[in-house]
Image (cartoon, rainbow, N blue to C red; front, side, top):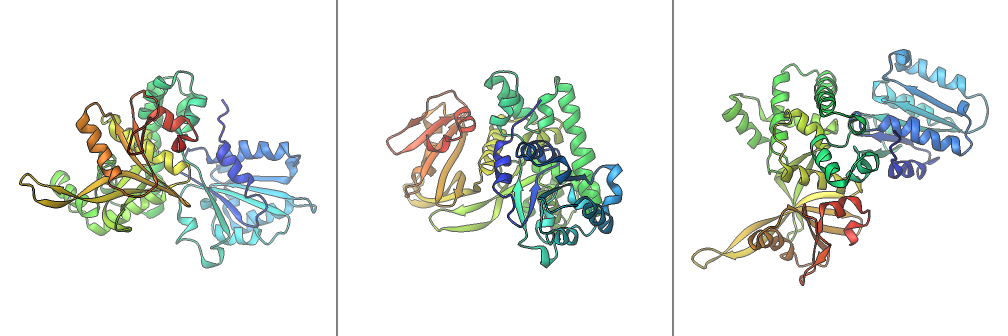
Length: 417
């Protein structure tokens, strides 16, 4: 089954021959290799690039382990460049290559090559890279399938598709599996045997149970405000563990670097400043989050919020949690300040959207609860409420747009409806 990833293909096409290393990042099994070795390679072939001018090495394959040596891979690549034509170097899981930054830097000095690599952690674009390589890497971050991409491959209607997606997520291989048993086994095994092992081996973690407990805590609290001190308190009171604050912070950083979780910082809209903590964590894919908890805590309200967060980020937006201070009288009529929360503030260049993931607004009180933070923001940027209900897109007298989750996820221009 072919799954189109047109956005990411266009991202690569737009970066061709720019003199930089195109670095495709993303969580394991989200489709990086498929994008590079199937979709992009097919595009190159359609442009008339001969097979001999596409040099591809999958470094995680045992048969290619000799090319994890810097000198061996440079000698091999050099032996394949036999004319002045344009060559395309495609390297998979480049973090497995020793001194990969020096190798890539060397390859950049070859006039007629264009370089594309994939990697399953963010380190090689940040603090693990030596200074000489910084500024020469151009990142394309690939996410698991959005709901729209999922539905293009799913054999069924959008309602059954949503029921599948909210439980098993968007890792491409899950769409091809026929039974729930297959999906559960695949996702559970993937988390334990690939994601967790990668982190433990990379960072030489000895107390693995503490890492496992932390993942469970984060998975159980998606969409809730938290921070390391709160998590430490949970360790002490619930798990009876004395894990240190520094360890918690370090482990969270490891999970972020492996693209398993992402954070949303809090932003004071009126004060125009970020608030340090608490903040929120979301999983890169709801299927791996559910698998981590044994598919026992599939709360659609929180999972929908996670999916909205992921959708916005896959569209290129930076996403924060909004905080608005409003004067609200107490029971005695005395005015006091209250902090109201907006689920997401999405920013991209000059564009900004305030978005509530409301699931349902069955009562007047619930609607007031969702709309009050939005109308308390006195600027001209668009305010949107996303609900699970099947409704037409509506706009009220205060300019707040309400739309169905299906319109939000399936229509590329949904933020402009």
